[in-house]
Length: 269
Length: 281
Image 1 (cartoon, rainbow over the protein chains, first blue to last red):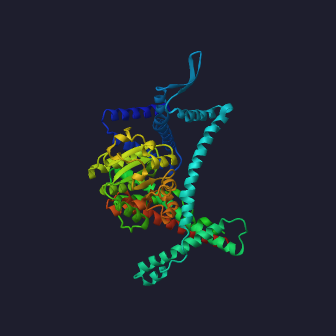
Image 2: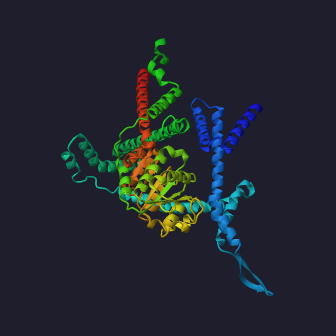
Image 3: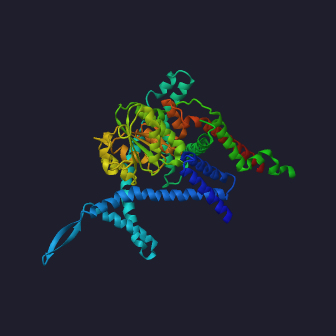
């Protein structure tokens, strides 16, 4: 075990020295590291193994470190720390009254309101102390409240109402079936036919799916038949989603293999 | 009795094939077309054409917000889109302002800019700018719509926005012609539509991973999206339109091979399922 550790450290040190001294370009080094980590992750397809675990832990560790550093420098420092420090340099005293000639008042400075998010941020860390953990709920409540407010307006205005309006379409578009009759050639007839079916399919599909989610009455008789039609529409949409998911996952494999064959091995351009 | 055992049946044996053999088959389906550098012609679908025509209709010198809301995990699908879109925007002499609500987005957007800017003679700060990442999701979107400098006081390199020549006179989204969002999930194109499209009457188009593609099509029908590139296929179609073959087009033969193989697997599994069911009856 100790030998493996020493050997690994030696190899890593040698590679770092080569990279720093310019014997290996950082691009080549980066490609090798990325390729070996990719192959390590692929090794899981055979079976779980320590090489895969090693790559997985590296990924999690680097991601966590990267995001902490990024959030610190991109959010905390420019949005809170720097404005507060700038404000502290310009503290002014708002005199409320004088006591025996001595001014008594409140220190004020530009950006003073940032102390509120600063305090709420500090309160989040009380979760580490069970007896004071309840204080973190104030911060969480503020976050949830503000995000819910933002999201609800967007969801109503930009999604629900817009989608309801978009689905108020005529069941039958005049001339659409005449276009099927006048189309020339198999392809044109097919596309004209699909176009003529568009609105009826949207309307029937929407109503049938809504009926499927209507639980106030038992789905029997006519209601049951429409509900079953709704299930068919749902199943077709799930099938489409699954097809797209396959495409997405295959794209990831293509991307990795393309990288291995082009950037790493240089077999393809 | 022995001849009725399921493992004697070739179909049943194949139905219980080691999954690693399926992985190898898929692997071969991908790697062979890539090694052969096979290409295929594709028909361009209406959503892709919609985005292309929306960009094509922009006046030279107009401004576009390019939201690089993705990460390396979705690069095979979204990076080719980002490249093809920036190619098209640069070719049309449109000024590009890129911002990201995903932390790993800015370096990817910057890589695209740096790769393409010399080819089109574009300069940072004059023809394009990268404003980097900003935490805050929907709140940032609304800030961009109201006051760009409040949302992004500095660019990716820490330069104040007032020092960037191309941003002179650009105050908020109303000064831009269009939002092009390349997004891998939340926050992404859906949030841009919900928060911005209707409220600020902004033209929005973009690209998404194939997984989120079906969820986005209703927004095309409602007119909230002018066009959409879904997955690698969408990227390949756009590359074909702008006549710049990239990873999208290179990967489509491999993609199609795997799709055919998956269909074969599904059909085969169903045949075996029904044969076993009949035998059990």
